[in-house]
Image: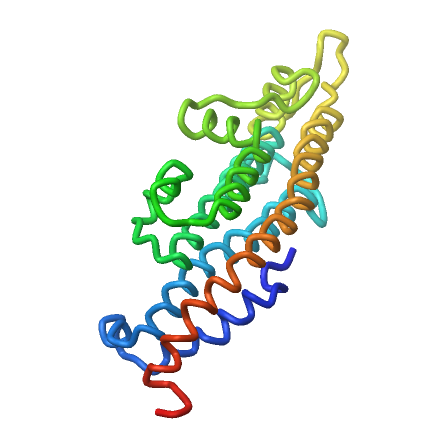
Length: 244
């Protein structure tokens, strides 16, 4: 998934070259046009890197080849799904957090990054349509945002198959010992249980990825004219003006 197809992203990236003309941020900050372009680019780069990092999660959910021996693999099958879920939820949910930081920089709200919340945005001059769109992005994350909070703040975990306890124990014995057989003397269906959990994560991933690109494109559509309206007057009067 690419994060740089929108013209707004290309425009900001082109302007980011200004930082090459200064030794320090303090020197750059003396020029209003350069500072504004730099600050917006810094926030935008955080967002695009976070979006692109979801490709890493996709690689974990659709591996080119399965390990031949999970006993020598760094993690068990069960732990692989847990790590994949952590990476997916943490990075996907924070896309909106990074988007709010970008909105803060474009509209020059002056909020600290950690203060960029929908509640604080209601206290600063951000257009209603932008606030509504951010709110809709948060609402769209729905149960996945709730699960992220539960996993990282409360230690809760999702189950990964129709028999999560059997899958977890069988994965442990496969990884550390020589496997495990059931009461009938047969090997536990670890591959089937692993596939159930993997397919569930793949389904969640595909569902949100189709939407997040459209949501960000719409956000960029709204931010583009706002950025130009703020940047252009400074550029005309700034050190890189054509008339300078």
